[in-house]
Amino acid sequence: MLAAGCGSGGPPAGRTDTGGPSTPAASTVASPAKPSTSTGGNVPPATGLTSQITGWRLPGPLSRAQAVASGGRLLLLAGLVPGDRSSGQILAVDPAHGTVTPVGTLQVPVHDTAAAVLGPDVLLFAGGNSTEVSVVQTFPATDASPGPSGRSRTIGNLPQPRSDLEAADADGKIFLLGGYDGTRTRAEVLATTDGRSFTTAGTLPHPVRYGAAITIGNPGAQQVLLFGGQNGGVATDAIQRLDPATGTVSVVGWLPAPLSEAMAFALGGSVWIAGGTSGGKASDLILRYDPATGQAVPAGQLPYPVADAAVTVLDGTAYLLGGENIKDLDTVVTLVPRQPRQPR
Image 1 (cartoon, helix red, strand yellow):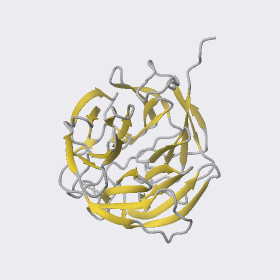
Image 2 (cartoon, helix red, strand yellow; image 1 turned 60 degrees about the vertical axis):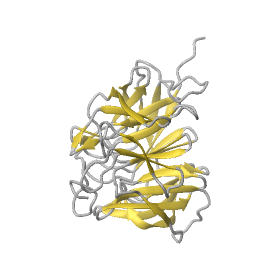
Image 3 (cartoon, rainbow, N blue to C red; image 1 turned 30 degrees about the horizontal axis):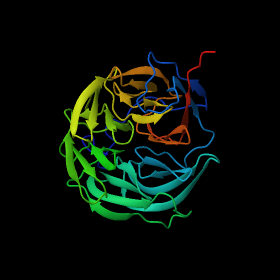
Image 4 (tube, rainbow, N blue to C red; image 1 turned 45 degrees about the horizontal axis):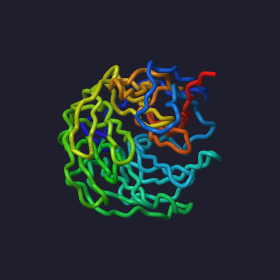
């Protein structure tokens, strides 16, 4: 990837220089000051996470891919493989048995794309190859059969090429936030209900690429959070929030330090931000977002520093698949919530 974009002519922007994992180990995440109730529900929010490297690995090193959970398995799509080449692979991951099976290929190999599930399909929005692309690709999320013969379909295009973007599903729409068009970082937030037509739903006060997005709240009143990211090679510590109902995007808090290429996920009634790039190096820090204060507070460590991993949640477990530090990784980390102790 080019230093200013997502081309294949050099190392990816944000490639970091911290050493990789060694032997599998488990770590326990310390409790933050306040529990978050941002995801709703009657179960008390988790006060921490327990993280562990799995005993199984991906078929090869992979970073900047996308993962979705569907039908009791994970689909792992696109990404960057050794040689800084965009991948067209689509893999089905069975975490219960530790198996990874090819199930298809993308018509347009990409990395730094954005994924969302729409009905029975997973949609991949734009991404990078030798240059930024605008194509929207779709692949069955549930009924893909083993074997590499399945092919994605092209169903549309974004208004402009865009890589390094984030997708979030909120109240019946898919929102695309941030990204890079080959010349500049995009501030427009795009919205779609079908992956074919797009409207401008808002404007980021801090335009970024390589942010980490997550949807919070109950249906009918959902919001999208965007943590960190970078613009012009400079990372930000801003936490931005999109209100889908009004299109308003505002800064609602700050990270402890500028951060990009992190992984955000909701688990155990809380919102977590894991890893990423901070100070030019991959981070092993786990943060917990507290909507009451608008702050993300340190809440523990990953087994090893990692940025640009694929992330998804299945059956109460979060998975960080692959990623990078000084090189692309083939390891997988699981994270499970630890609930607060109830008074006797």
